[in-house]
Image (cartoon, rainbow, N blue to C red; front, top):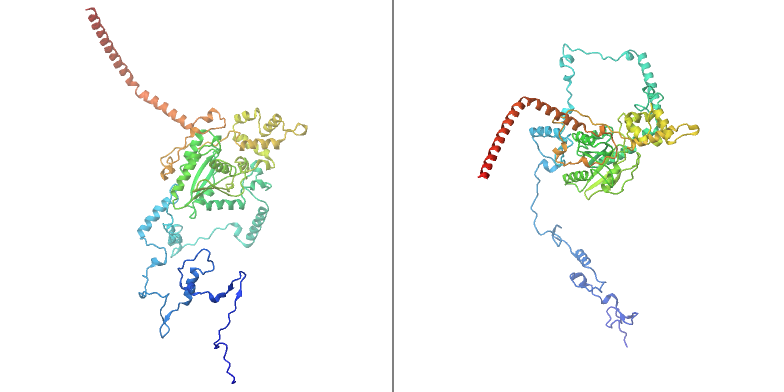
Length: 587
């Protein structure tokens, strides 16, 4: 039989046998050949059951469809259509109006309007009771004229004809005998250099305790007097000033001017911080008479809003007024979500105690010694009001060591010789208060007083010698903590219309306090309790009564005669009526 040609396997008419693999369940597994993928890509809105987790998601189907879409091009290759091509025709080239307002946040203002703006703002910008609500919308940079600052009016010092022209005269400067020749100049320089080296070796501080002859004689200064002036504390203070919208300067009611920082007030008047508010709080008002507190509040209110305060969690005074004032500041700044209130001032004036009083619980550590607060603390008072407690800082005011000790800036326990400061306490406090508190009388000077007090309290060393250091620290602690009655009386000058104004009322802030509710703990004498204002008013009223009585003295005799005539007429009328009644009864 002839042999037939072999055909390739693909063209073979015989069907290929299918290979079936058995699954674990005993059913044949067909693989991916039997699964159609066309419905997955086309139908993106299909409904899939929760059990079906192998199907593609709608986002995957859209992405695969995007891969298949192609742009429609013409013969030149330019895109003329497609799925992702805009159907609307282009409107053409757009142009922007050439205006300077598109390239900056600038506005035009006339020359006269700018001058009026400068005059009005200069009159109000340094007023602490004037609040600028929308400072961002005003061109504050236009307040100062740069051309006026750059110009120097030289004609105020010398005339033009004296400097330039035919009659010009040039005066030779007077340098003194030290600059006549090179030898004198070199000698003068050596002397100044030697003085500078001697001054650099020792930390020189103005004013020391004791006699004036001993001030700076040896140049030695105790390190304890440098407390409160470190760079770290000043950095903490500037952090609080930068983060605060309202700055509360806490003052000691016993000596408000002594615990007031002029440097801080000047800092808040600068261009960067003049939008911040400053208020005074007279703390420890329970240690001074009521009339003294009222008078100091009246005097300090001429410059800044002032409140009297007594820090106590159980029996405070001024808490409601301070919270009301802070709420008013919060309403003034509606553009801010919250405002921050920073408490600053001298050490040991009660900043942390005021924060605890406002929160009505202990949130800050307090102690009757200076330097308890080390770093600033952020406390929440309300939803829109936050408090910042700042460590005490001693500004450079030129105070002597005695004044620093009496203000409570220095820790008494760390003084090397505390006995030398007792004389200042005895001069400041009245003698009757010292005798009443310690029960010691008949002393002549500070040393004699310390000796008698040591013998009474039993603070003696071996051999019966008094322990001056311990007993001196006891006296200084009593003075700092308010056990010895002491206060600085306010000045009594004549009040004019400008001085008697209350700037807080002009600002719209309501500050009302009833000083009769202040609980004064210190027992003062009857003389210190008397209000000089009421005494003067009573004397003036008595003088006015005497004057009015003298003026009306001439008319008293005529008035008495007229009154006597009226009384006679009344008596006659009464007797006539009685006679008529008697006749009627007889009838």
